[in-house]
Length: 203
Image (cartoon, rainbow, N blue to C red; front, side, top):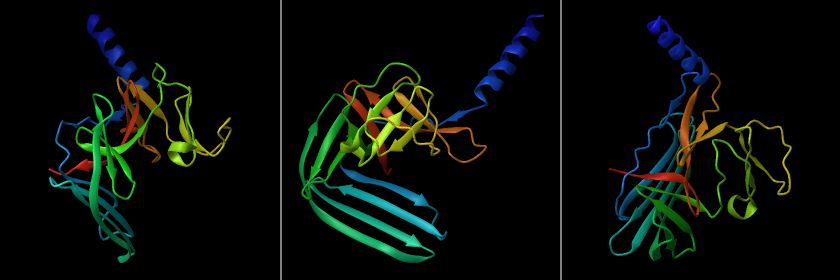
């Protein structure tokens, strides 16, 4: 009888969770110097983009961006310059200011954006991050949906955006591909705000 109860509980758990898969947090502490990158699409496919930042020990940097559409290079940008400042803004996050006034934030082995907001408790919550950070409003709602909207006061847009859920200090966003039940790391939560990773340090 006890074995039957265990089986029922397992099946119930699978049904409720839908066998969701969550991206493993593979972040680790590392120094600033090195190369950070991100890609979109697949090489030799119809669309491919690649971003890279390389930070040197002499406080200089190189930044490159390449975009290929239908096997033709649409953009190929290379920029270099000086790192103006590198400062800790919390126990976890550092701010990098480049000589072109660009600001990047570093958390462990990642670069990205940082938003000074107070995140409410709970697996889902109501939170609006206004235009000064994104160029448009970014909304988390209590129903577990994350979406963008130009209206800073209220949002009634019906466009489809991903579901999200908070687990500990990570906000996971669900894949927008139909029939996929995968959740990727979208944000890390800290006492003084949200970090959104964009680039990962290469090994």
